[in-house]
Image (tube, rainbow, N blue to C red):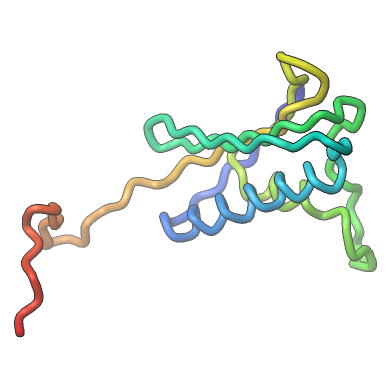
Length: 133
């Protein structure tokens, strides 16, 4: 098993965008690098408190996810996906698939608590009034 950490402070909308990018990248990697003809990949999302965990499982256990080496001149047009995941996720890694051939690549991101601006009361769903006509 392998794991990398990266702490980042973000707002809730930023976290939403980060989650979408992480999920898209892990799924794209499963299609491009983890595909075995006749087999699919599995995407699982789990939430515990404010932490969202994205797991993508494929059937190619021999292809271990490794971030690409730095490209200081920016000439590469691919191979940056796991660098994005590492930059956006609070924690990410991979582990062998427990129930068959393959691996699971996962990433975790903690969503910040949304605050209410000073002097305002949060609106509860039953407080909403229909628009005036």
